[in-house]
Image 1 (cartoon, rainbow, N blue to C red):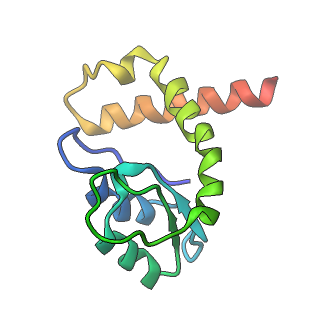
Image 2 (image 1 turned 90 degrees about the horizontal axis):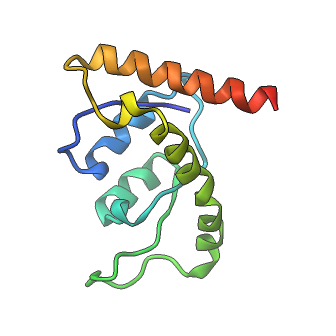
Length: 125
């Protein structure tokens, strides 16, 4: 798993490749990415396909070009709730939701502590 922290203003599409570079196991790459509608971009699909990564994301409702995938790959999208659940767990840490820190380094430290606590809670069950 990789994490990249940035300000709230850039689009998610522009941050995806930086997040992929943050995966700690060098040489390991995911076979597929299950993303939400915010990532529906044909240039991004092409860049990921060149890297050998299948992008699974529903199309936006205002898409003008023809669909690039049928319903079969979107069956994997049903498991996206696990990602959204993790975001909700991170939202329970008020320090992450309301950003008091000005430095990204400090915010990153709190983010990693929150991830460690979530992992410990899952292991201790």
